[in-house]
Length: 279
Image (cartoon, rainbow, N blue to C red; front, side, top):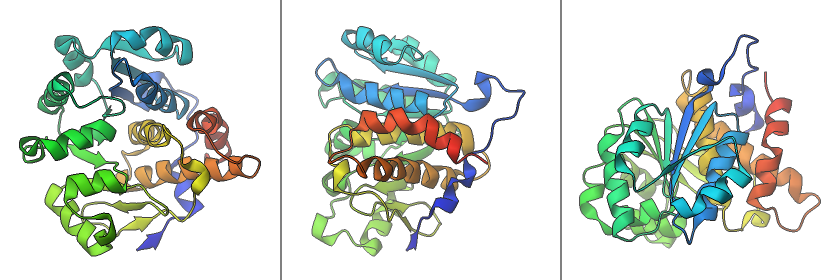
């Protein structure tokens, strides 16, 4: 297992002078019931601040005012408006599904629709409630879409999805389940592990307990989506690793003067950090 270092940040390219928003990816984030709107707002905001050219948030209508207040750069669609959501998905480079999505019948209908409409060339980041739904609905797990899937479970979510108890989540056992899924797995924990198909397992040696706050994973999904939309064309694995390193490196910097690091604190520092590390 290889430890990631700051060298991975070389994927953050300096932007050419002749640029426009279409060069930097269209991200669609799907989730956020009226009870859990904060999760999808953080994911969406992180994608915007991490440089995505266009970001559309498909969420509950109750979240519209908060979305426009927090991140007016993002567009909105009602996540129960299947026709409009499918139209937006068609133009996406990366899709996030799961933050605050919930696990009721509406949530299940939404994830089924997204799975049915994702394209092979797109990146699909599956997080939070969407992982729980997959664990509960075996037919979803058996019929994953033909696309570039990135699961981002914490250890308990991975236990639900993989059937591997936390105490037994060794590299060998995790790798076997990851290969069966045919997807990339980002196992979030102290020293997060990244299992990518047919590539060496990598580990994140940075980050700490000051990141143990609700919304931290939701913020990570937005950063991953933005990095895949901007940097994955040359090396998708490096783009993913760089997103993970960026998330924790910013937290480490903030923790020098803070007992706890909030996800929104990380979002606020993304533009600065990427500027300092662009080549």
